[in-house]
Image (cartoon, rainbow, N blue to C red; front, side):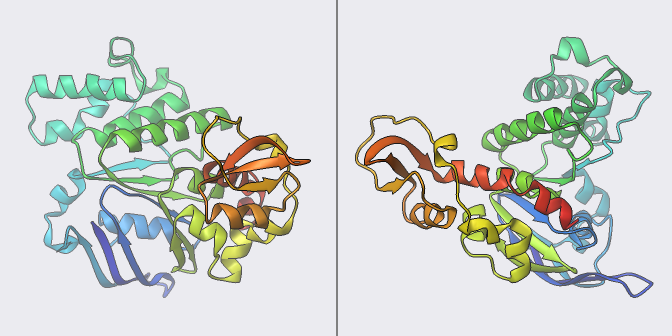
Length: 316
């Protein structure tokens, strides 16, 4: 879907923001770019829709060089969600969402129906919100409008640049959960920039960990947790903590009566849990030889992610 072939970005002051980057982002994939401040993740994102042009190398979308697209058509067909939201304050919510469909000369009825459909999709009642102004909405509601606007013209690609980082923790978690629901219900390729390792592990199908303009590792959350490619990756995701104990009793799931599973003791270390879950989707947890619950890969990934916030902030 999106391919970076030896892409570099060198600024006039000779700063190399991106250095010989090779990436292949798959169709309908939720792909996360993460790394410390100044690693090149936002520059990489902005090169996809040519808000920043590459200095060297080639970027392709559906096997066509992005420089061969009309730049306005390219941007109209790529949704973009910013941290700053950037809604037009004097326009209604409906008018904000309708900007690109109107530029593409959709009929009035088609635009009206699309606005209502998207407001429903992001959990805001069209009858209540379509005629309001952005200033009448909370930060979380405004960011939902930002997502709706990015989806308005039904683009194949959505770019999201730290869209939830300015929100309070409750709003942020709610929007993360909304994104999990959206990615299951819409067929879009989403490229998402964050500095929050927990957010990356929660949302990403695959994650690219960057440092100094280079991709150090690309993989699923499982692959990165179980096999960090460099000492920096190990430190960044907190994988050095795998030998620490883990309170399995605090996070186990109830027994569901399913067939026989492999077993692990309740006092197992995190590395032991990760090892067995690399071979099995879920396992029984035993205490004194008696099954007390079960654990699965998703639960462990969420546990790991919840213990990475501090490490992620230290590496910003």
